[in-house]
Length: 226
Length: 306
Image (tube, rainbow over all chains, first blue to last red; front, side):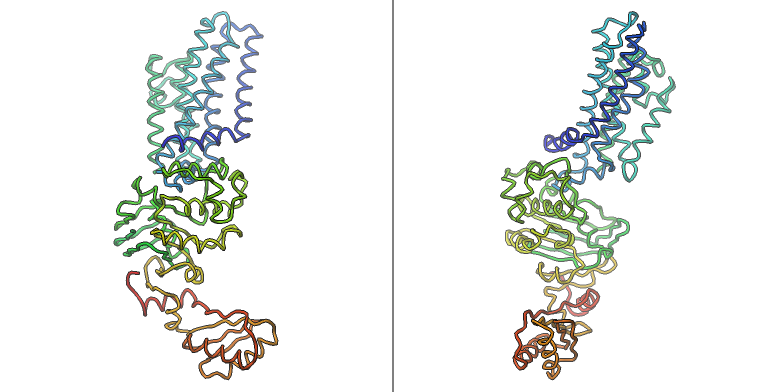
C-alpha cells in the first residue's frame, strides 16, 4: 500500500526541474565555501563550513525547497487530495509524502555532508574518513528531521505558508543553547556538527532527539491531514 | 447503500441541516444551486467533510473507513490528480490504491474516447481533460460502488461528454449507486432516475420524474418546437395559436415556445398545428421547469424517499 502512495511523491521530485536547480544552487554554495576553506589552508575548515554554512543554511533550505516542490505550493492537506480521490486515506497519503521527502532529504544531506567534510578538511579537523562518516550521519538525521518539521509546518496555512513560520521558529529557538533549542532540529544538528549543544546534551541524545522529532512531526502532520 | 440520518454539516460557505435520506443502486440527482449544499452532501459521502450532527452511512460503514473509501469515487468540479504522473501512470496508481487488478490504460480511457491522452503528463492537461481522466478512473474501476459527481456534464472534455450518460447508466445497472449534484434540471432529467431537491441546505422535495413536475408547475407546461426556417416557424405560430389547449406562444428565431396546462395536450396540439401548416419540425422538446418552479412543485406535489 505504501508503494503506490510513495511513487507520485518520488516522481514529483524527479520531474520538477526547478527543484533540481534550487538544490544544485544550495549544493554549489556550500561546496564553494568548502573549496575556499581548502584553498585558504584553514586549520578547521571542515568544522567551520559544516557548522556555519552546511548545518545553518544548506540543510534547512534544501529541506525547505524539497518540501515546497513535493507540495507544489499547496498545504499538506490539499496535496493529499489527488491520491485521496482514488480512495486512499488522507492521513496515509500525508504520512507517505512526509516519509519519502524526509528520506530523500536525508540521503541528499548525508551525501553532501560527507563531500563537504572531505573537501574542506583542515589539518586540525578529525581524520577525513571518520569526519565524512560522522558528517554524513549528522546530515542524514538533520535532513530527515528538517523535512518532517517543515512538512508539519506546511499543514498550517491555506497554501502551506506555515512552513515559513516553522523555518523562522527553528532559526529563533534553535540558535542558542537554551531549553527551547531542544525542540528544534537546528539545536541538535549544531550539536552533531560540533557546535555548542543545547542544555549540554550528548551527541547521542541529540541524534535520538532528531529521530524522535522526525517521528513526532510525521505523525502529527499525518494526523492534521486527516 | 447510502444514508443520511438527521445530518447537519457546515463547510463554509455551504451548510446542510436535518438531512434524512437513503439511496440505493441507480442514478440519483441532488438538484439545487451550489450554495444549496449539494457539493457538501457529496463531500460528506466521500469522507472529505464530517457531519456536525447526525450520521452518514456509506455501504454500511462510515465514509472515512478505509474499506469504504476504496469503493467510493468523488468528482468535485475542481478535480485534482497527481500532476507529476502521466495519465497511464495515474490510472495504474489508482488501481493499486483501490487494490484492483491492473488494466490497460488505453482500454480504460476508451470508455470516454480519451485513448489519445494515455501518455500525456497530467500537468499538461486542461481542466476538462483532467476531470475526464478522473471520470474514467471512477467509471472503469472494478472496486468503485458509489460514484459522487458534481455537475456531471460540466467541465468535461468535448470528446467525453456525449458518452457520460451511457457510462453512468451502465455503472448503475452493474449495481453502483451514482449520485449527481447539479443545478441543471436538464442534466438531472437526462441522467438520473430520481431527484432530490435542495434549498438552503434542506431537502424540499423528492420526485421520480421531472416530467411529473411540469403538471404541478405554477407556470404550466412548456414545449419547444424547432423548425427548419423562419417562414416555417411563423406558419407554426399562426397554426398553433388556433389550438384550444394552447395558452400562449412565443417565437424565438426558428424556435417556437408553446405554453399550456397539460404537456400531453400541448404536444398533440403542436403536432396538429404542424400538420395543418404543412411544416416538418426538426425537434420537439419538453422544456424543463426552472429550478425554483421544480422545487416548489416537488415540495407540494411529490415527496418521500426515492
